Length: 198
Image (cartoon, rainbow, N blue to C red; front, side, top):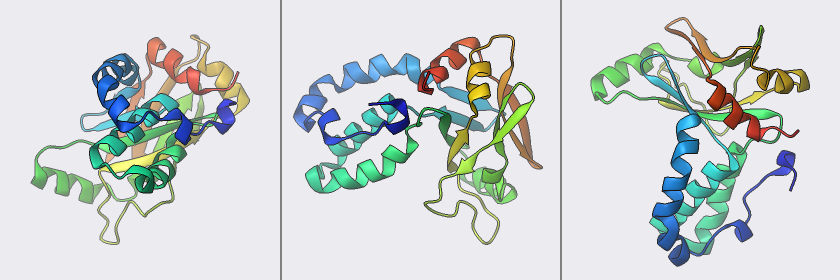
């Protein structure tokens, strides 16, 4: 299946009993990939760049834990398939991670609309993140969610530059209350470039 049409289908999934036997091994095998796909942006925000493999594991986990069987499968595929990059984009779960409940509420209240200020920068070009349209992430009172799902569409020239070590690649946020930029390491860039159709 071409990367531009990559989706999880029932045939990709193991039965729960079978997955339970290999779950630990699969999680361990996926850890190095997940480490490369996590980038901290400032002190309280992390990008988790998703892939077919990370979403496949997540669907298997949800089915195993919730034991909803066939009835649950359609909901899980509807929730996680949209987070699989389609050959010329990056898709990220962006999380504000603050343990203290009071501090978290106060911080998120200052970050209204932050979902519209994330970007990927390749060389001099910035590609704005497009939030998933499932629900509004900033409430009417201005408080944002601690979790955001974003797509970053790249043009063909950006895909080529992404692989060029002479071109810098970064993620960032331009919100007035959370202005941060983080360069991507060569290892992370190589991992994320696996999402691109050649």
